[in-house]
Length: 269
Image (tube, rainbow, N blue to C red):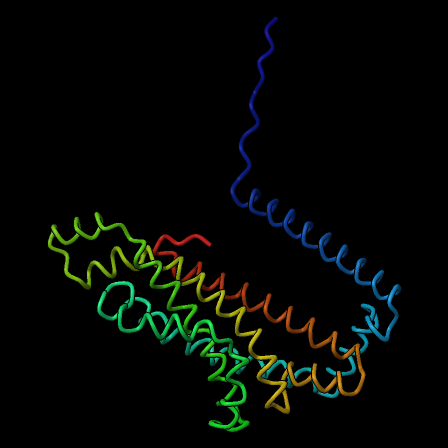
């Protein structure tokens, strides 16, 4: 007697997506729990004067949130980062397209790009305060400075990576420069632009701390520095962890927005 094996029907796409989501959530949970365990062991080993425990940090975060200090710091730092980073994208993407496409522009701007991108924003903190004061402008300009060159370099690299054969083929078919830019150059450059935007966002978080330490009364950098002066290690941990969480959230939101808005270019993040 012959036994007939019937293959199980494939799982629906929604079910497979749900399984993958649960698996990813489980891995994230395990990773966070392991990290908290290591953190707790370090706190027990070194003591509260050097390493605040997760419970002490959570309690300090609750106290800082209750009096509004943490909320005000998050809002102030987020506003400065988003404005400076946004201006960096607004200037960096068009400049990168020009640098990548037009050799004359590349030769004119390349010496300045290669010179200034090696000077860290921290070196300009004092000058920014002297020239622009201790207001918001100095912090925003420093974040713009740390963002714009990263975006320009990544965008221009994306433009220059487009195959010359594609450009010649489009031109031979009668495509105008604008059509080539929209139909060939941009789709190939978008992944580089998104990567540059993410790298610029990370560097913006590095810059905001040094800028706020020197010239700010409110912000996560100012909170970390003030906590150090008062010897509150738990507050320092609150500021550091809040910066990490904020950066993680910003990067995730950027990836989601980019994947949805730029899907028509064939970008997969």
